[in-house]
Image (cartoon, rainbow, N blue to C red):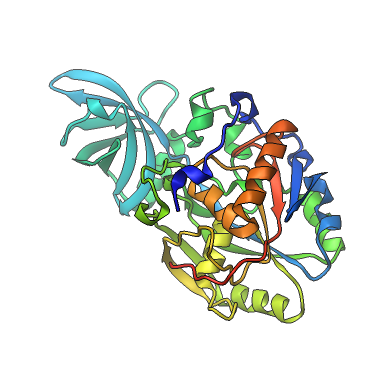
Length: 362
């Protein structure tokens, strides 16, 4: 399919720079093709049914944005980095800004200044394309993790970071209440809307929940450069579904309940782990599943997700789930009704459209 089919115009003022307070006060657009209706996230207990099961991503975002100083021949220059992929115990791949200031073997110092008691040094081991560099740090394993935690800040998406600097509140705002397993460099943002109070209301309604892990990579923000979906190479992310979780989700299905994926990350991992029959298996591996219109969903019955970027793989996924025409209509409605978009924005509750069977390829 042509990528430009997934384009739309979004006014700049629709991009949310901070989350709703409290989190579950965010708006919720229910898309039950072809019908649209306006609600609040707090309405979820009434919008779902007893026996349904919400599936959350329990990944935890690490403070992957680092500010450094390049030193070369006694000359210094400031460079910012966003860690995107761990290569080994002591090395990370990162986006550098501006990357043109860096050469292989440059030395970088991080955490300098009176506000930092911990600092790091790294060497540029290699330069790649599109601003990517490989950094070899002077420590590894838990010692490196601790230093990054002390020095780094939350890696806000570019559509927020270019409009305002990180704030102390982002340390909690950009983390879901389920976050327990370090490894993501971007938040599974649909989970940001949930609060203990909302979870209590859902449980009282007879709606259960399970967790899985997909460590979200920065590839989720990369623009598609291909002209067609067939030409696009999807980024890989590591995920895990335990045998106990898989068994519990299969029991939900067997008892007539629905699996409600909270976020596209949960949906992608569930579909990666599902057999053609819909049976969910335990999973512990990388997935590069790319879901576009025509793909048949095997495990997910409903999807809660935020509003996504135009021409993005995530907008393609929701279009595969509820239909491209339906989602274009839904987004047009959301824009007209002043819904807030992207990571700190409002949410959708999506139900599937009828479509011909197709397979998703991991």
